Amino acid sequence: MMKRRIMEDPRNVFTDIRQGCMNHTAGGEWTSETVEKALEEFRREGCRGVVMFPYGFFADNSETEYQARELLESAGFPLSRYVPCINDSPAFAGWLAGKVLGELNRLSNIQKAYESLEPKP
Image (cartoon, rainbow, N blue to C red; front, side, top):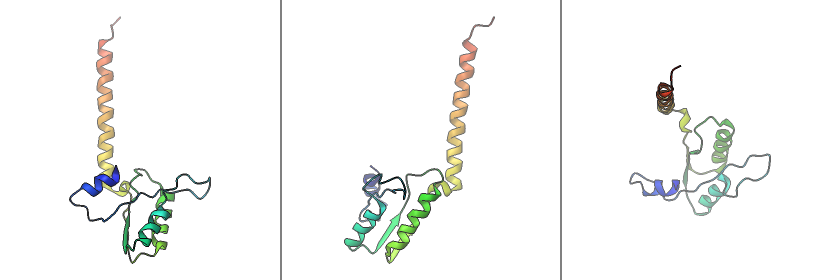
C-alpha cells in the first residue's frame, strides 16, 4: 500500500520503491524482504542513487536508525540520502500531542456525560 501511494502521487520522483525490513542481529531472521536485499537489487539494476526512509517508526528506535544508516552508507551508492524518522520533527510531535489531547478531552466529556446520567441519592 505504501509503495502504491507514493508511486501514484504526482510529486513522486522515484523510479521504483522497495520495502526492506530490518532483521535484528540476534534472534534469527524475521523477514526475507530485508534492507540488504533491496539495496542489492537496486545495485544489480544499475541504480546510482537511493533514498532510505524508516516510515514504520513513530517512536524512537535508535538501534534501527543506526543500523539502517550504516547499511546505506556501506552500500556504496554514488548518491544516497537517509531521511530521518518523522519523530525527529517538532511539528510532528506537536501534531501527535494535539491528537492525544483531543482524544483525552473527548473521553473526559463522555465520562462527564455518563456521570450526569447516574441517579443521585
